[in-house]
Length: 450
Ligand code: MN
Ligand code: MN
Image 1 (cartoon, helix red, strand yellow):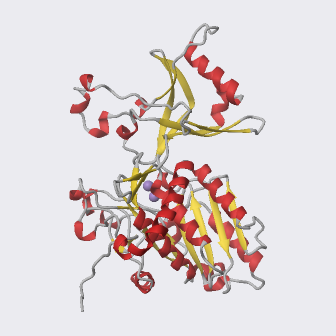
Image 2: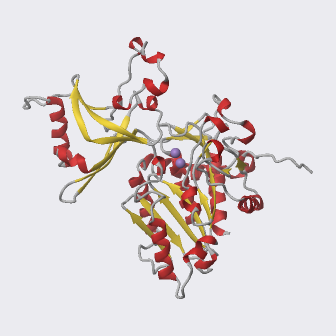
Image 3: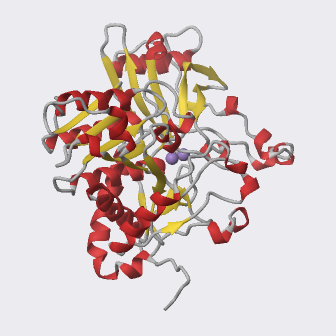
């Protein structure tokens, strides 16, 4: 009998299920290519729920509610009363990117540009000299909403941020990376042809004229706009064997996609199943659409009112609940193995990663899942023979990070971070494993149905 714990390779475990792995991966590639903002992602989820007969009317048994187009609550009634607890998976639909400033447009050196303010933890140099697309909404004073999505179709133009040529970068390369790339130089090139009739700022005015002609917009409309510059183009298969998926925004749309797929593949459950896809995780879960808000609480209280006749305790419902904070984990990078502590690092292809605690040096800011709950989840996965791994984010003194787990933990429910590993996290081209995708799907499905 082997007493040592050994991780398993999902490709080997699921060697007879390559068709299923690939069909899930193809669906995911399409999802990832089409949904690059939180609004687009929530809209995708809403469309699928409507097709599947979900309602905004909480007196029904399959329901959802959307807040500000950016966050969604979904529930399916279980056989047991709410007091016995729910099964909840929370993920986030926002991703690091460059937001246009409210005063974006200007011209310099014969090009028109847009100022940006980055959102979330980006490495600025990764956004230079690459094709960018613009996604977002602009709301006019009439309330009319203009949605834009420019740079994704092969016939669309793209946008870009110019980078410094190496010939003139001698001073820059001497600087620390944190100082070498300045946020105020992340300006997106939008145009180049001057407008003949204009007296001054001819290129900027040409840009404004095109925005007017195509979308009926004027400069002031951009004060009430949320426009994001994101990497242009579709997600791709990576590797000669096509075993990996490369694309923007896998943190955390991979978990949004998998939680939804797992939820839709489930039958009428014992416990009520709940999914929440939040916004603003990348900037600390703030605001009315973030996990620190009361949105989830409002929704659960309304469910209690709608579904249960006698007085059910809100506190008891949550205290009896089990949750997964579905977010990506940093897989060990073959080129930077030194930032990981190998005994407690995760690997691509070895299944979803349990992270007992997140946080920074000394576990500051962590949710720490209880040993009893880890044992429960371990048992569930082992029963289903789903490969999984246990890891920490990196070496203790090197950094850290957090997820939505701690904002749910305040209710006293059991919660743990559990999701697939990715490489190049927060970059314009994150990498995940098709086999992990499949294993995580199965894990979420069984979790929801326990
Ligand atoms: Mn995340
Ligand atoms: Mn993140």
